[in-house]
Length: 157
Length: 163
Image 1: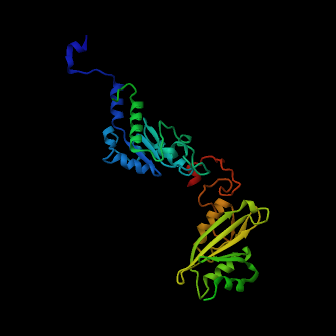
Image 2: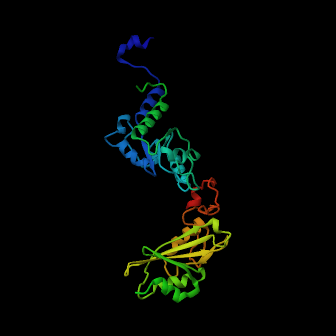
Image 3: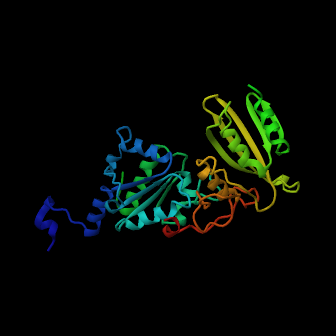
C-alpha cells in the first residue's frame, strides 16, 4: 500500500536513525574543560552576543556524566592529562570532543617538558579549532562541524 | 645606620665574598658553608631585622661548570620595619649540588627549597620533607637544568602517580 496515497501530506516518513540524530545534533550538552584563555572566549560563545543556544547547545553541564560534547579549552599539561582522560571516560556514549585553540590541538607554543603536545595523545578528538585564542565564531563553527558529523546526510543550510 | 654589607663582611670575614650595591639592591655572594648562620644573623639583627623571607630560587650556570660553580641559590630577604632588602647569592659546586636547608631559620623556605630540588636537583640538607613539588612521582631528572633536552618527553602519568 502506498502510504503517501493513503495519508496524503499529513504524514512524513523517515528512518529512526535520522530522527535520533536530528535530535542529538540540536541538543548537544557541552562540558567545558577550560584551563586557559580559550575558556574566556567560550563565555562569549555562550552569552548573548554569539549565543550558542541558536545551535541548541546552550545547556552547559559541569558534570561529564550529563554531557555529550567535551570542549577542551586551554593548555593541558602532563599532570592534567590523566584527569582529562578520566573525565572523558565518565561521559556516556555517544560523545564528541573538540580541541579548542592551539594549546589543546598541538601544545601551542608550549613546546616543553610539562605540556602535552595535543590532547589527541590522551583522548580521541573530532574537531580541532585553530587560534590563540580562537574567535567565538570559530567555536560556533566547530559546533556546526560536530552537528554535521552526527548527521552527515542533513543539509545545514 | 652602618652599611649592611660592611657589617656582614665584618661579622663573617672570608665567608662574604663579592658585594655590590646599586639602586638599593644590596647583594652579597656568600660561602655555602655559612649560609644558615648568615640567615640567622640577618633575621635576628637588632638594628634591621630581616623578618620576611621573600624568595629562594636556584640557578643553573651551565657554562660555569668547568670553573666549579655551576649552580647557585639566591635568597631574597626583606626587613618590614626598616623597609630594606638584601640578596644573598651562594655558589654550589659539583654535579650533585647540596646546601644546608634554610627551613630551621625561616620555615617558609620549605616549598621554595622543594621547588629548587624538583626543577634543578639541588639537595637541601636538613629539609624536613625534601620531595618533588611540581613534577609528579616517577619523573626522571630535573627539567630546568640547562642540559635537560628541550624535546625530551616523559610518559604521561596515571592518576595513581598523582594522588
